[in-house]
Image 1 (cartoon, helix red, strand yellow):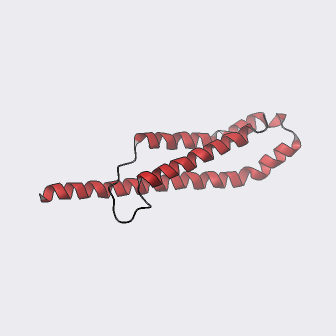
Image 2 (tube, helix red, strand yellow; image 1 turned 90 degrees about the horizontal axis):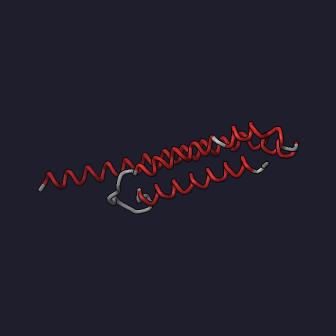
Image 3 (cartoon, helix red, strand yellow; image 1 turned 180 degrees about the vertical axis):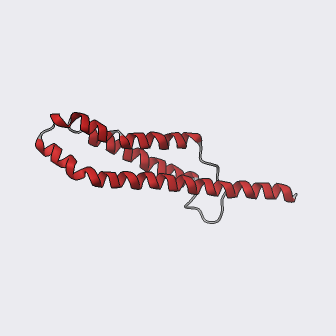
Length: 120
């Protein structure tokens, strides 16, 4: 029971890292030039919302069950509280930044396609 908040938090971090990797792959950030990029899918937006909710979940869970923990576990969670919040903020900011960059590259792709059609 003492591991539940930490496990939930780690699960949220794994989902966040996976979402960032998906955005990097679909946004083709590692390729040079301006390759065609598709817009951010609604599934990724939904996964982002799930990720944010999973990041929030461990904190109320800890507050609900912390009275049952021994003092070492409470001390650990007290020390890890602020650093975990910093990681949460950085992960969510990275998700938003990568989704924005993918959407921006997709906008340029759409603009190029429309200009090519108009030029013919």
